Image (tube, rainbow, N blue to C red; front, side, top):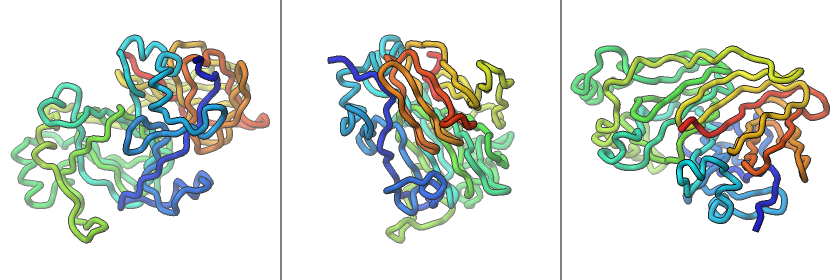
Length: 332
């Protein structure tokens, strides 16, 4: 059976964590979205939030079921090079009306020691209230003993680096880097396909059941990279023109993913590559055209283009300008 050759829209999977807000529904006109949603899982190959196709002849099929039969056509060289049995990334939107917990994820080198799944991620800031901050990494000279004492004194945040963010910023969070997203941030997160989070501090708040949410201090302390270099906001590469009216800027390129910001005023046919790509329409609507398909990716939605759809042309709808983030597999 041949995979139908067209870009895939998935029904978003919403998560109602206690820190969520209302921006995902209101900002992007999401019909059927809850009024309050902490996260929208845009592309997910996980049982606790499986993506299901909502458009075209594959509508109703899960990403997992498609990968079981069409892994090479969907993933391209990723499948052959890594022996991937599932989708390697998880793409989500995060609306932090309240701050997320101070937390850490395992990294590839220590996941066997602390358990769970390795998780390196990045945050592209779609919007931020004035003064909104994120935390990433420790202040200099933070040791495990000093941090344990700060946890006991409920002052963990005083040992974290804080960054004021604005629309368009990119923050890289490799596995093992302590972090927290502050209130007022709307974020596009791209990460390894993992759902392992170890909480260290949760701001003394109570969960929906009236009790403090679980912490995972010992696992987290094993997961932390204590020699983690001092982080900073990731400086983007210089914007370059790739076609008339099309400007591209690399946001990040690492072992697990590559993100580019694309400003589009005219049609662009990216060079063919034997790998999947996903597009999130940050501003305006995208028109996608190729052999056998001509479809719309609306503002605020994410579309997955299978590797088999090698020739696509991306343009703004009705000749207007648009902007998007293009997501591709990493360099491994």
